[in-house]
Image 1: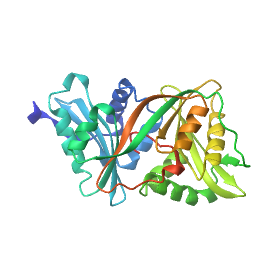
Image 2: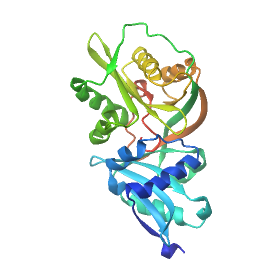
Image 3: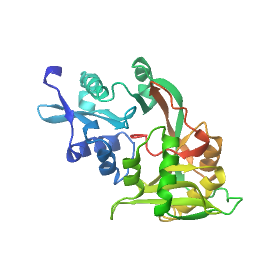
Image 4: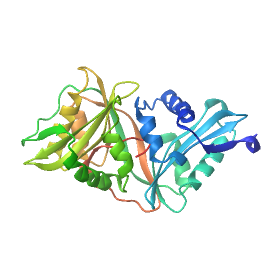
Length: 287
């Protein structure tokens, strides 16, 4: 059967099937994620087909010349243990040869990733719940919609917190086309740019990500303002690096509870991200 497996880049419409698989795995993707994800690297969204039917998926998105991120590694339950997953993995990772590669690995797969040359960098914890409180910033934070003059500062902060340039993707993410359910806000102190955050509608509730800020006060202000953008009593999801204690305190202080975790892992050079600026990662799928 493995000889009949065809692995190739999937169209936007085809990869929507993999997104539904992700829903089934409990990953709760955003309602409007796919178009922005796929546009980041259309050749980096692969699916395996048997007799024309999709059986596996992987995303292997290139950023710049030296970095990539792996996600959406899923095998349809009917084909697990058949070898199609390994074949898809092998074909997909070829797309990232010669690059440092990051991923957020679920617990069940972490040993396999280690055998494939990935090293543990840190834990990310998904927090979820109705935001009931949270700290009030101790300084005056000016929160506003993204302005044109802030785009350069936003892109630079994103580069620092992600570990590579992904300008085309993040522009699309924070400046979506009309009708896309993502809202981005920025924070300023004395007219100085100090952070930004994006909230988006998901299959269940709303995810905040990224939430990047130069300090906890800015992050607190952004979090509260983003929560205020969605209906009251909505479920809020925030994926927090465990190594940022202020981020953990923000999530727990807002009444959110941990629901599961991933391991951030890298094959190649660990970019050693400035965790003190990362209060919410963008996504487990694209980093």
